[in-house]
Image (cartoon, rainbow, N blue to C red; front, side, top):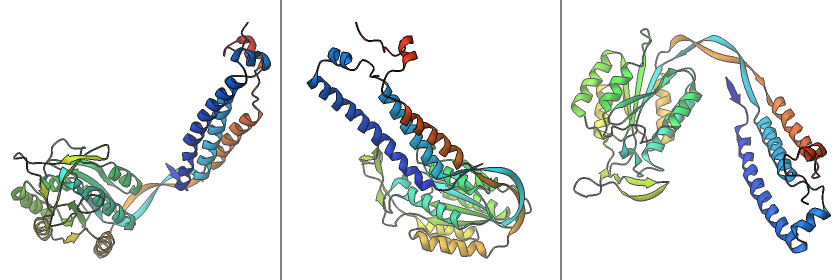
Length: 348
């Protein structure tokens, strides 16, 4: 298991492409200047031992050296021991709506990104609960099974988008049915399902049936509404540029609205609460209070311990490449010149 201590230093890697571009323009400027001074054949006679490829090789060594030094600053750590620990918590499943209506921008930046931020902030408040993630639209898809690996949960969460499911529409019942299969601990008394959605549901009748089955399985359902009741159109984008708005079969622009009534009904039937997700801080704080009031079940979990620093390896490799860059001269290498691998022989 790898852990990164100072991820902010990754931003320093932005200097690499800048240096490559600067090197390219420098070489162009040198060639132009040399042409003004003398012809290429004359320059080769004036500087017969000047290598034509060493400057590029020196740049490669320099960039490699800087890259490894930056990785050293990030300080990767490797878990050297896997141990079993006792934890107490609740089993939580997040069902996130990824239908096209979640692209509406009535809540910034859009409903889906807001949903992902809400779930991520909730995960930040958890200590030892187990979590799972489901993506759903016209069908439900298991994104992440029940786990205590919060880092993996956030990674899978950020990869969710409206193109991940081919079946469009919104079938909340499918998400509830799939969530019921997630809780694999028969002794867990508190099973919680958070449905994060704008409330559009194309299977309302079967949704209530799914809720009743979930209650029988000991699942408490909370719903989090994302969007505005007045609604908004659904932008159609390509490469981040809006190309138009989604229209229905009659050519009218589709306006998708937050359906709080449906979400509130599901939460009420599911022995939970409807939560307004427009204010992230308030929503997360309320959910934290609700989870803290629930009884915790003790379970065993495996996790890596005794993480060891690995920065010294990266710093050592980085310094090695920097020394190569310093001591590598621009003149031709004698034994390479004899082999003529790089066209180093002078032209006759």
